[in-house]
Length: 273
Image 1 (cartoon, helix red, strand yellow):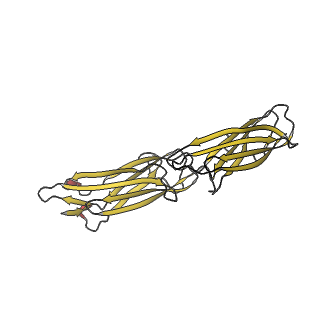
Image 2 (cartoon, helix red, strand yellow):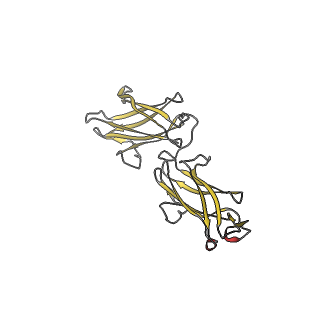
Image 3 (tube, one colour):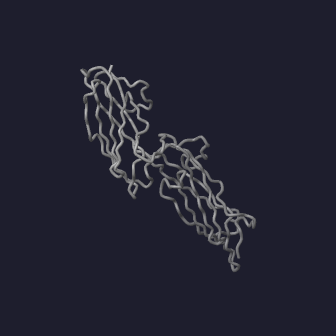
């Protein structure tokens, strides 16, 4: 014979008392809380409304449940490998109000853009022949990008120091300063294993238009990941000399996507004063 959990026949399989947390056993995060790329996300939930299999020859009651959980983006693509397991146990009459509770954690990818995400939970009740699912939203802060179908550069910023968070309002440096810049590459193609191959080179033009500095292979970047990287950051550190002539210079950045056979060029001006 079968009974529902709590011996209430009207109960329906459901994920209850569930939520996203910033640390293990912490309160559920508020709607305006922002995780950052590289943070751990914690999730706690209980399952209610499951069927209990009872053997009339004794007082043992059994349950058989399974669950799958994964953090996902707006398109339903998992940010990290799903957590999946089974819950198969015996219950005594004293456990009639007991609900199984589980905790899982996930590492948010490094190159995930700011936006709205969700934890998707799916549970199955073998004895009750029932399924249920639910989504629990969370937010990620950090870099904002505009998805692009083709290779491009976004969020280009000149900086005073390499660790600065705020860009220069006026890109002006003194002779002998190091010109720092940061940017994000978007719209590159990926291999089936979500790997990318990018490179970028620099040319800096003098006020006269003639080359001041050239490095056609400033960086070569390649990696793979479980979740397809939404962007790849790039950095520029160019040191001027004390006798660098004053005037307006133009930094020409050329990005190459070796997987998609794409090239993109962007020009940004700065001055030495």
